[in-house]
Image (cartoon, rainbow, N blue to C red):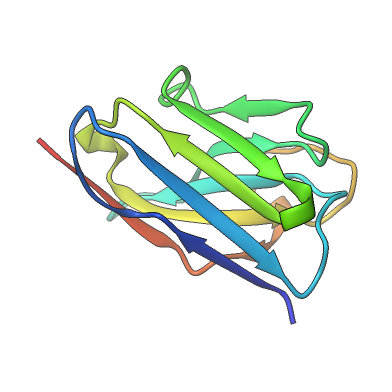
Amino acid sequence: QVQLVESGGGLVQAGGSLRLSCAASGRTFNRNTMAWFRQAPGKERDIVAAISYDGAITNYADSVKGRFTISRDNPKNTVYLQMSSLKPEDTAIYYCAVERSPFTFTARLSDYDYWGQGTQVTVST
């Protein structure tokens, strides 16, 4: 059974940093794009960042470019999201996800089959 478990969320002041981790188990995802999405109350779930199977390609939402960095460690089957210069508008539940098809790269939510349970990130003013 595939499981994605996020950790690292919490409460931080504006301007601070957090590092999210997502550890996958039950299957190896070294051929799949992995990504972070977020969902704020009353809003849709949107992509934050994605990273290709080998880490060679990354993509970021405009709102986080220059502040967030996605990375992965394939031997550990883990993806990370380093978040810096956090803003109150970054407050959301953050989900990691794995794309369905190997060796492809997409930002479409519907292309991601495996999801974590989410971790809350709250940025105070």
